[in-house]
Structures are given as structure tokens and as C-alpha cells.
Length: 113
Length: 114
Image (cartoon, rainbow over the protein chains, first blue to last red):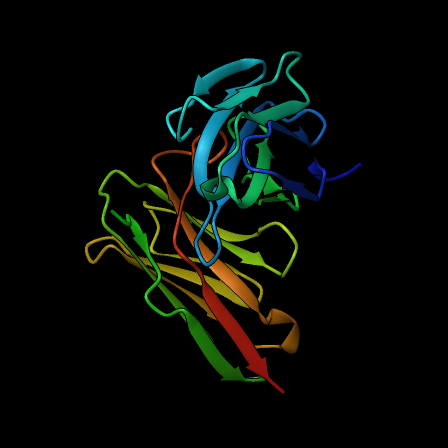
């Protein structure tokens, strides 16, 4: 597709379960970002990949959060032992390195019961 | 510590008039600024950006103004149209935005009244 694709669009999980969120960036985009958006707030940075290398993970809130991009294309954000405060929209963005703005997907809305 | 602030949670403007959205920042390291528009259940869509070496950038109905000494930027939409009704986010980064994380404000909900 032409844009950033995220799946699933909605995910409901019970507290303590593990979840995996997928991001398929725009073809050819080297840079990939994950953001977390809580209700009524702006997106907050989680982590950044350049190709398969995770260059910045300073925004990950705890060691329960893990992201990977093994082949430099699709990325997965995994949250282990989910807690209620993990409920948010998780946004993925990609950009062509060195030029152009970040393009966002429509996000995954995660609800932890 | 909110480094990018949008102090107006909402704004209503008559169709055809000018909409002015404001944004303030505190981090002197920010060099590039962007505006994103967001419709419900969709991701943010890039609108317009400005580098700190400029004080104005224009793209059609959208103009962004930057006052670096005041650490303030604004987005002007002229004329406002019903399709402009959305949440607008101001964002900033420390260098060229291709591979630098963005810091966002909390957004301003713009409603255009027909």
C-alpha cells in the first residue's frame, strides 16, 4: 500500500497478557518510529529504528516494552504482562532518511481490561 | 515537563474567516517545527513545517510563522473551510525531521462553523 499500515486497528487484552502490534512502513522508508498517545494527549516518542538498527529506545516506559525490526522493514512492538496504564493508541511513523516529514499510520488502539 | 505547549484545547471559527492556532516551546535545542492535522480514528497527517532559519513558510491556505526569540509559532488557515475541522498538533525536533524524534503538543481542536 501507499501509506503506513498498522495492525490490528483495535486490541483488547486482559491485564497480564502479552500483546504484539505490527507496523508496515512505506516502502523504501529507512526510518521508523513508534509513539504512544494517551487520551487527550499528543503522541509521545517510544523508539526509533534506522533500517534494522534500534538507535534510540529512550522513550520505552519499562522493560516490558520491546520493539524489533529484524529485516529493516516491518516492525513489531511487543508489550509483556500488560497493565491498565498501557491503554493508549500506539502510532507508527516512517520517513525517508534525511528528508521529508514522518508519515503516520492510523494506529492501534490498545485497551487493557 | 511539557516542552511543546498548545494552551488552547479548542477553537471555533466561522467558515471563510482566519483560523490562528498557537504553540509555544521551551527547549532551545529545537530547530524544526511541524504542524500535523488529525481526524478521529486516523493517524496525524503532515501539514506544513518550518526551519528555525526562517520566520515564515506558506503553502496554499496554510502559513506557519516562527518567532524564535519568543519561542512561539502559529499556524494561520485562510480562508477556513469545514473540512479543516480536526485536531491540530504542533511538533518540534532538534534537527532535520527525516530521522529525528518529534516532541508533540497536546493539540487544539478546531471547529469550523458553516
